Amino acid sequence: MPPLNQEQFHAALDALRNALSFAAPADAVLSRYFRENPKLGSQNRHFIAEAVFGVMRQKFALDRICGEDNSPRRLLLAWLIRGGRNLREFEPIVSREDERAFLAGVKAFKLETLTLAERAELPEWVGSELQASGMSDDDILSLGRALSQPAPLDLRVNTLKMKREAVQAELEALGYEHSPTPYSPFGLRLAGKPAINRHTLFTEGAIEVQDEGSQLLGLLVGPKRGEMVADFCAGAGGKTLLLGMLMASSGRLYAFDVSEKRLANLKPRLARSGLSNVQPQRIESENDSRIKRLAGKLDRVLVDAPCSGMGTLRRNPDLKFRQSATSVDELNQKQTAILASAARLVKVGGRLVYATCSILPRENQGIVEAFLAAHPGFELVPANQVLKEQRVDLDTGNYLQLHPQIHGCDGFFAAVMTRKA
Image (cartoon, rainbow, N blue to C red; front, side, top):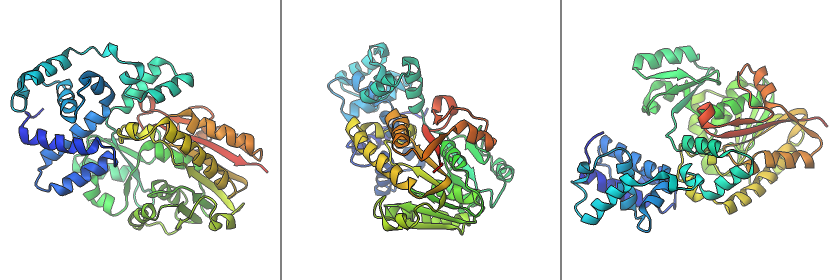
């Protein structure tokens, strides 16, 4: 652990103040801060990023520890001392007696005084919803604590360009510590955060950065060569590229999204991938005329619905403070409308997959159960059965439910349905 110095501390404090406004995602705030301060060295940038994300990950406990004065400075000091530093290390940055007393108090703080949600580093409303769903206190704690850890770097091998073993050999030669992902047959997990996007493996499209949970969603869709498939909420296209790979670049794959910017981000990734069967299309809404023209024609449709993102807190800890029970109410309405609209595309015998990166039951099972009740022409297909057909050794029951403390990936949910009439 390098010694503390004033320059580093004040730069981290400056970046943290910006991030705590929650006006933009923390990673975007940091990117802008680094662009505006180009003279910061790599060590300083690393320390600043660690500090900002570290405070975000522990902010519920830090707020209680700091009490009424939970200023960015106090939050940063508390995070640093909770990270194992001793009081002497703070001499370059702390001179006031009240701050020395504060640091000593942080050391003595009893975590047992925190609520269950605070100990789990989750908002109270999230803790309440998980309890109401039947999750035990111990399970909530282990889930919350896993979501408070930094995520590893997962890669997906583009098997149209290279085999996983060949990519492993290249990573080995580069000295990157890695292992195959436990469930995805084309995933690799790297230790640390190497700048893999500068390597030819990435620039030539042999690998993409993609969480293992996200890779498993593609296997649940299970598209075949020559089929007509849609990624209904394509975003920047990570899952679209995976579906195209599974289709061996044949058939037709629609990448729909309402955001021109997100689809623009897909274009360079699509070029690297070598896929020729993808058709990115911006739509005005889930009721766009282009959707209506495809009604009843598609073999498979993936709905990776807009959601709270509560399963991705390892990567986006600030989402805890930018979402609320009310914002999830609004998302539930969108999720219901989008799923019903996407379902119209599926032909008889076709497959519909609804997915989120949320841990909240009302964004997951709640949406699917309401959809099935309102659409008797669809029936649930057990996710464990589909994964077994794909030779994936994972059984979470009728639904795919992934949690970081159990499966090592982000929190994901998915339901597989088929149109029977």
